[in-house]
Image (tube, rainbow, N blue to C red):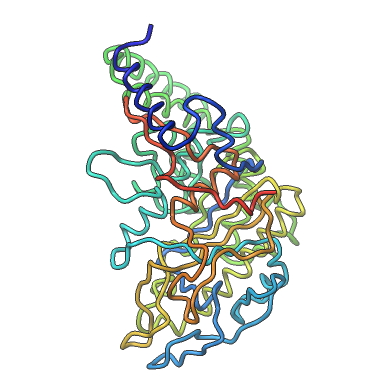
Length: 428
């Protein structure tokens, strides 16, 4: 039976759809292109990658002081008219597997946390609802691609920005920072026998059952109990075998050199076993002192970051291709904002949100083309702007998720994107 509340909600939604010229309850697929990718690996460059020094390189050369411009020399790539800087030579050769989206923009400039949240949830922070992250949307909508693995893994430190928001813990992530041992919470201590572990789980199970039965009407408690059950299920089998990187050949492991490279290799192993969404943090502990937040003297050390990104990203693309997974796996290289072409008093760069670059690769998209045109200093979008909701809509559409789909925050319908439109020409 339809309640009065349901009737009014459906009537309002139908009226809104008709006003926009779209179908009320018809085929919403006509509104957006759809891809066929099954997985997504997001490479997160925390701190704010400089677009003019990487993927939106310009011939105007800066001096690190008063003359604004690119800090490095340019090289041609496999995408005509889309040069890279000299420290991305490996990627330049296979750039036809990629799509640089050079016109991403938002209005967050001086606050890293707010910009990180925007690039993970696709929306400004709200006082009335906690929005889910992109990874949680994918986990909730598509689930894991195989039994015995979680849908969403974060290789990095946990944060609410990357969490499930109103979707609840079932759409949350499993996280780790050590690629060799796996998630600490799922690893049994070496001195704990099977018998003792079974006794502990039995005791915890009885306490869980008693508590859930006493709070049957509280959904959040049921959801957390389900999440605990899922965690126990992950302690063995294919998921934990993902972390046995030593099982890869010496040649493959050599391709994924360094800490970042090892995370990229683990991401492939996770995807191969059915994990739907993996976020790979580039520089978890800011071992160079600043990461991609290149204020002051950090600008002079930026080339080291770019070189490591070049090596790890190319290894990931070619490895997925070799494993016949690239067409089914969308790689997203993202950051919270870009940097201005001008230099600060210490020789570094500030923050710049009105124009920066994210890169897509694989996923069955029409790669080998650049999206968006910027001015001579990569500071202003000249043509084909891509908002953060548009970027999210493109990612979701690639994963065969309707960008206009509604999620439910209690009884309130919330679209998965904030009126985003997928970039149609990326879809065959």
